[in-house]
Length: 56
Image (cartoon, rainbow, N blue to C red):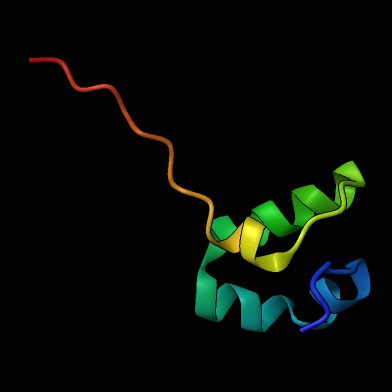
């Protein structure tokens, strides 16, 4: 593992990312690429889902 993901790697593996990690992860990867942030795939793929506030 090289760590930081590149735009080329994401674009070459769009189908794999979608199939194995889902649309949300794919959208996060594309967002990171568009924002120009430097990050690892694990940081993007393993982000916790936002918690919804529950009313009782």
